[in-house]
Amino acid sequence: MKYAASTFYYHIEGLADYFNLFIDKLFNKLSLNGTAITDKILEGDLVRVSVKYKDERGKLAASTVEDDIKVLYEVESGGILRKGVLGALMGGGLAGLASSLLAGDVDSIKSALAGAVVGGAYGMLDGFNTAMDEATEFSRLLAGCIRDVEHELLDIRRKEEERRREEELEKESIEEELENVYADMVSMGDEIALLEAEGRDVSKAKARYNIALRNLEDAKEALRRGDNLVAKAKIRSASRMIELAREELRAL
Image (cartoon, rainbow, N blue to C red; front, side):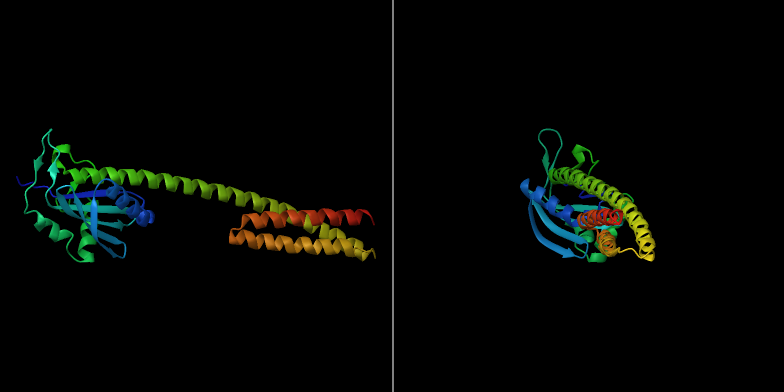
């Protein structure tokens, strides 16, 4: 029995930044499910391999397409159609279509991947929505593994976004605290200058004021580097120096 449909595509939206992790996780899942992966070739952001699952052999290629990830799988021989309880073994002679897409150079393969995004430009079947009686066992396994990895990556992205939001809120809080302490320091500086003009000995308070000033400058630099821990410590130190300077002035 010869099976006409031999090319399946899979479109994963918005996860191009996670391409390398996607490939690692996908190949690991496929291997754990009994897939032999050989002849791995890395060419920039294009990965292509040979796969063997039970009696089915084929070629698989994956690449980024703008913000998305695109996977293309082509059956070369073998494969069991999921049709009823019995299934049917595919015949040979399917390598012609495969060689026209996945055995070419990088540009032609990437063009095939990009073309698949807009839907069936090469007569390919959607690997996620293909009916059970139109798919090979491996194309269905591949779809399931891709979906599992997609959900894992979406969870990773969600956690990263939450962490970035938390870091941004923390930074805003530190910046507000820095601004408040800096305002106290400016006020303290004015007071020191007035008392100094009156001939008072403000040397101790002035020394603490200068330390506070250096600490606040260090805090600003730490914030610029993204080192919130150091920034908070420097601000606390500056606030303490201002408090001590104020006590010195009260004692005059």
